[in-house]
Length: 419
Image (cartoon, rainbow, N blue to C red; front, side, top):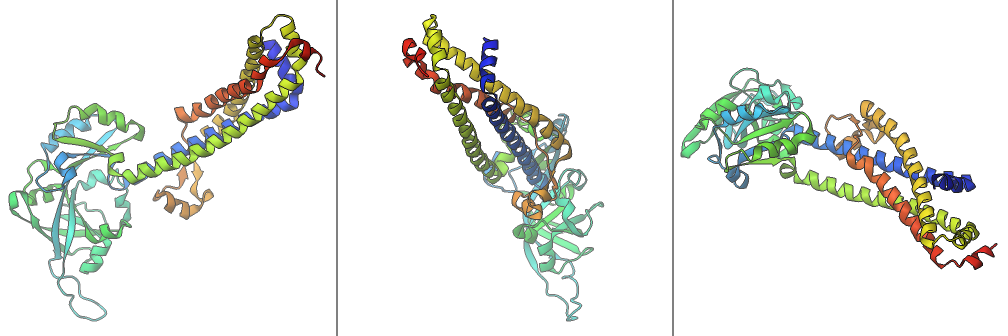
């Protein structure tokens, strides 16, 4: 059957090669495009989560619904140490509070008017962080536009808009006044070590990053945190790691991955996937129509041959099976050609990347929200490796079946008289 199918395919070599080339090109294009999508999505997710929120967070269920000071993760240090033992996972704590901030001396003197600035108090979101741990994992600290990341106790970062509104500069003392646990008055003084510009106007107006331990003490939190931020070495392992320890957490705690923390990113990815799937479907349907045309021509050209087969005792189903085998061989040739072209290309680009300036430069970076990412790296996945080949094999079989089902209506005598 293989020899007969191969002989039949070589009867019209130009048509066979064109059909194989069409199938191979569609496999190449779809596999490469899906790999490029997978790589760009992973970079987009990693860039967005690595900026400030982290890949995931553990927090009190009540804090997720209503972020109040008393809704904390208790025994935070022990939980952090236990989670840090998981390979590929980094964990660091945070506390968060809303407070009123002002400068200890009312701000710097205005050099233009030589008049002392008026004292100002602003509302702020004060977040206690572990600067040493977070600076190695999060990109927000790359945007310190003045001063430096605090290295000494008592240092803090403030948003750029807050610095302008307060008239604050590096070296000024920042007074933080708010409510602590159980209604106690919380007060602290931090030395402004640097100014950070996040690019988000609301955050720049209200953000204060202070040392975790000192802010927790000021809020009267004892071994408590409002969240434990999770960072993984490989984003694809996040779900497995989260599900591994989620059942072992106290009932009052919950794990939120980036899908819950940033639902807009997930929705935009799903929308993009839907649009891409429509494009891929149209491409594969067009190739399938070309295959239908190929086997319609086969039916007309080999009518006498089919009639001879049936006159010799073959049933119509056996004739159709022979043509289906030829279609299978044709699709396999096309799939192999497409994969032979696709995998070296994808493997090469996975190593060197595709420069974003080849895809729109700074505008592409802004649109894709990738921050300082300069390259996109295609990533081969199970879906990108199998979707196009399977669709083309099944589609070719269906296209051949639709074209050759008319064999059942062939009468041997009439077919032998056909020109």
